[in-house]
Length: 415
Image 1 (cartoon, rainbow, N blue to C red):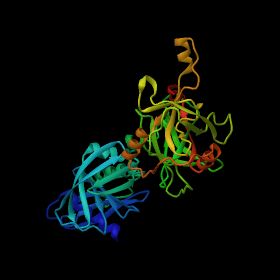
Image 2: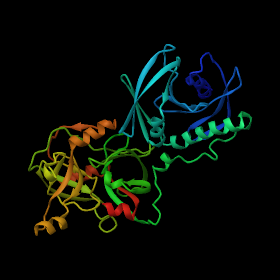
Image 3: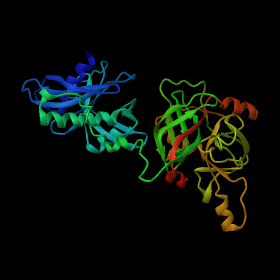
């Protein structure tokens, strides 16, 4: 009853002055946990809007709607809210840790804030996987997995009701055009391309909520599901939360039902040139061991190619498949994310010499900025007593993952 009353109350967010009641739903919208349909103005009987709603574990209920004029709205409702009617609030929303917008919401009811969504925000909302909403000191996360088909169903609802009337309302999820923004999440291979082979890399868990760090290039070009698995355990489908191509970082998340025994801690003190480091990952998966491998070396330099200070140069050997893996110090804390090895053949062609033991990792400064922007509750720690390499490897086993997906031949060629 609470959910239905909120759907009905969403009529007020359309800004129809003096209207206090709505009738519906007519027909249905059922996508994932979203439910809704079409609604009329109870005083005039005219079609008003289509809306859908879903509850979240954080206690907030989202209501998305489009009115007969084509205006989209987003409402945040909760039985614990106590707003004065007419009260205004600014809500900052961040999608997948990258695209941001400010919504201006009004309390048409004491338990609900409603904001108009511009079309550019609707498109981003439609294709995003995660939305973080900030209002004052309140910060809330919303999984947007099903919003693509919900937006399509609501748009279909408005179009059909305007054309055929409320008396012919049916299942609005049927016949809803698949939005281009939703298709972008899992693009089909271009004409003439083939799925070449499994593409693999490494990732590591950085929060108790199952957030997983890897490289952007590890997931770039993936077709279909991205999977992750700990050694000896079944693979799970991972969701892309955010990605930063310029810093070669990506954030994935495990299903909410997954629990991890431990997660990595990020060193809260800068590493020094000459400090020992340990690389753990899954190089040449399927050719070498199915278990992760461990290599050691030192931090050779505090900058990367052409003095790029976002990166460390390391001497620990890395191979294809190590990308996205953790770089540890001798206390078992994260000091970087393995990203690349120097292009030896190109350097040899240019200089006549084959470079040895020149590899790179992303520093924790860039990593922490990325995690902060993605609102990830990671943990930091001061370096303490040194551990044996075997102990560091053993401690990393519960949170170091093989990342895999299928990639097109074209995508593989870009690597």
